[in-house]
Amino acid sequence: MQKTNDRDTARELVQGIFVAFFHNKATAHDINSLRAYLYTMLKNRILDHYRHDQVREQYKAYATRLHVAVNVNDVDSYVDTRELEKRLHQEVSKLPPQCQQVFRLRREQELSNKEIALQMNISENTVEQHMRKALRTLRNALQAANRSFFSFLNF
Image 1 (tube, one colour):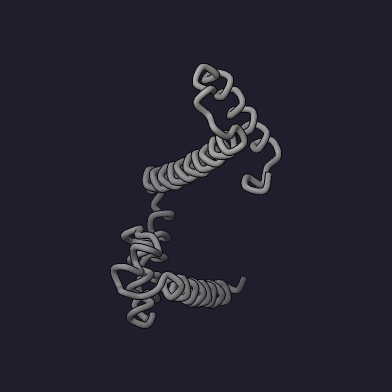
Image 2 (tube, helix red, strand yellow):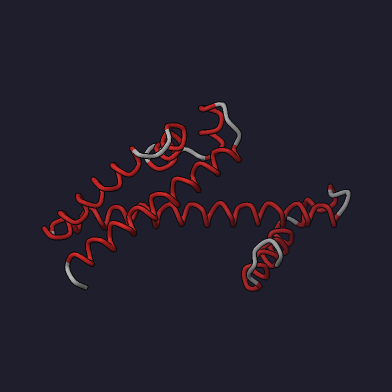
């Protein structure tokens, strides 16, 4: 349960390895250490579970982007989105050069922290720090823009 943070998932994974072991009992005589064998099976099942969750999350993000693209027919939504994108690009261009490059590689090219670190010849920790700084700066700038917009409308 420590690896999955969910009791039901942990039970399913453990049950799955015992079912798989039962189905492969013909090859059980080749096993030197049953404990090590079951541990390895469980470790692999947990890794498969995480990979499956990651694929599921990527699909959700894709479906959300696709849904947003389909719903752009609403003119007000389209205009608001374009204005927000324009504002975001302005704020990104104000970031320090290296921070800006890390942000663009991560968000626009969807590179991992490790890939960005290798490409820019910096540590992964530096990449993470640049992303935190960029996100904090952008969040603050966009919130300030929203406050000034709403105060203009007397909200």
